[in-house]
Amino acid sequence: MIRSTPRREGSDKVFNSTFITRLVRLPAYLLLLPVATLLLAVPARANKPSAEEVMAHVLDADPWGLGGTVLSARAILKDKRGATSELSFSARSRRYSPPFAKTLVRFTGPPDIAGAGFLQIQKREGDDERFLFLPDLKRSRRISGNLRASSFMGTDFSFADLDRRDLRESNSELKADEAIGKYPCFRVDSRPTRGDSAYSHIESWVRTDNYLPLKMQMYDRSNVLAKTFSALEVRRIKGHWYITKSQIVDHPHEHETSLVIDSIEPSDEISDDEFTLRNLEKL
Image (tube, rainbow, N blue to C red; front, side, top):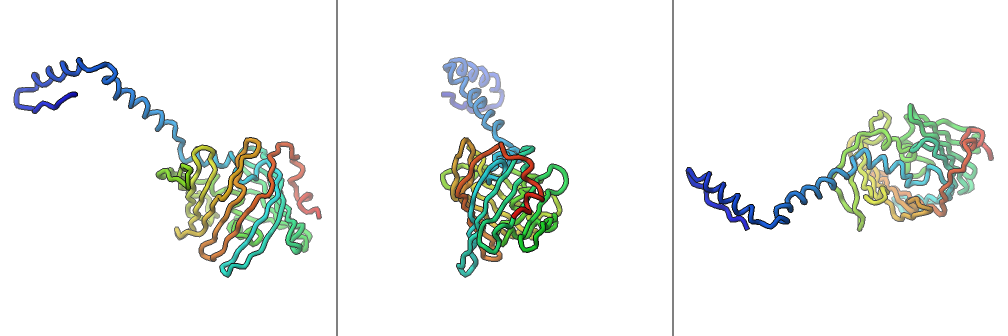
């Protein structure tokens, strides 16, 4: 053990000589401990991904199953009085330029919207393409960028929540890590850079092992909490992790939507020809 020697005027030479003598007598492994500690600490800091890398992993992982899958799902809507309604739909998607994808959604119920469809084509440059087809109108309607904040088929998901552009085009910052339940999570604050975003920023809690977002909080332009997304069930299917049960709560309207994916199958064999207006408008 190295004991501190009181320092006195004119004693520097004596103190240094004594200190060096005692230091030389220490076992070699003790001398190497500080160096080893530093070497172990540096990789831990260097290997932690940046905020941009975390969100890039989230988008690439496709936890929502909209980039190269065939799925069937239900959305259960609940209003502030507790009344519920349910939509059922199927979806086919193709990843054509990772993480960008093309998705075609077809509603099967309730009867008054059966046959309605939605086509989304994400783009690297410019606005994404979005078309909504309603059988009663017998034609498709383009959903422009200034309508991204609108509700998707009456649910608490907006068109913006589906296209994920507010995450794709954002400035992100890492906050202190925080666990959700038993899962350690990166906590990332993302600020959308496009002017048509309804959100001022989005906080995401992302699992550190598989990059699944277990929780997201979306804040409106006044920095008031607008929505909270929570992953309730995740499943690994053929090597892919998907969020198979989730809930999104619209706080100002006291409304919520639960999304249940009944079946999902990864696929890279879906033809590009499926993602056309002509196919969308087929009844």
